Amino acid sequence: MLIVLWALFFRPVGFDYRSKVADPRWRSAWDWGLFIGGSVPALIFGVAFGNLLQGVPFHFEDNLMPVYTGTFWGLLNPFALLSGAVSLSMLTFHGANYLMIRTEGDVYARARKASLIFGTLMLAAFTIAGIWVASDMPGYVITSVVDPGALPNPLDKTVEIQTGAWLDNFVRHPALWAVPGAAFAGGLLALLFAWAKKPVLAFIASGVAELGVIGTAGVAMFPFIMPSSSDPRSSLTVWDSVSSHLTLEVMFWAALIFTPIVITYTGWAYKMMAGKVTNAYIETNDHSAY
Image (cartoon, rainbow, N blue to C red; front, side, top):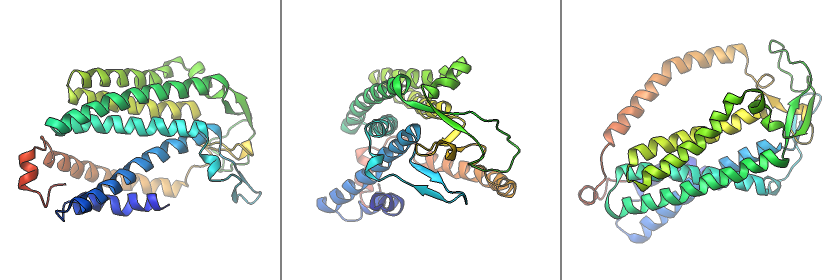
C-alpha cells in the first residue's frame, strides 16, 4: 500500500524535487524513491495478470456480495512472479529505448545496454510463461448459454475448469496467433534496432511488443475478466460485469469530449520535451531540469 501511495502522490513531484537541493544525499534519496515507485507497480501489474490467468480465490454470495478467500502471500505464487518479471522487463525495455532517443554519451550507452538486457529477459520470460500456460495450466470455459441482453448476474451461468482452455480462442481463430507473434517479432526487431543504434525504430518495435504481450493475455482470457478459482461460476466476464446503460452513455460523451483534449496536451508536452537532454542543458538548468 505504501508503494502505491508513493507512486500516486510522491513519484510525480519527485522528478522536480530531486533537483531543488544541490546535495548528493538529497538526490540519491529521491532517486531511490523514484526507482521503487516506478519498478514495484510495474512488477505488481504483471503479478496481477498472472493471478487472473490462474483464477482468483473469491466468490459471490447469494446477495452478490463478493468474498475473497485467499491470502496476500498466496498472490505471490511462482507463475504470478514470472508474469511480474515479464511486465517489469517489458516496461524497462520500452523505457530504455525511449531514453536512448533522448540522451547521448554515457547515459545513452547505459540505456542501450539496459535495452538489450531487459529485451532479452522479456522474450525469455514471455516464452516460459507461454509454455507454462500451454502445457498444464487450467483455463475457464462457459458451458451454459449466454444472453448478452440479459441483466448482469455473475451467478447466472455455469463455468468449467479445463486444462489448456486458455488456448481455445487461438484454436478457433488461428488469425489470433498474430497477437503473440507481434510480441516476439516486435521484441526481436527492437533488440536488433537497439543493437544497430537506431533508437526510434527500437522504441516503435518495443511498443508493438508491448501490445502483443498484453493482447496475448487478453485474447487468451476472453470473455473472462476475473476468473474465480474457488467458485468458477462466480467468474466475471465481459457480459456480467458491464456497467449500466446510463453509465456507458455518460462515459461515451466524457470520452468524446476529453480524449481529444488529453491527446492535444500530451502531444504538446512531448513536443516541448523533444530533442536530446545534453550535459550542457542540464548544467544550465540545474535547479529546474528533471
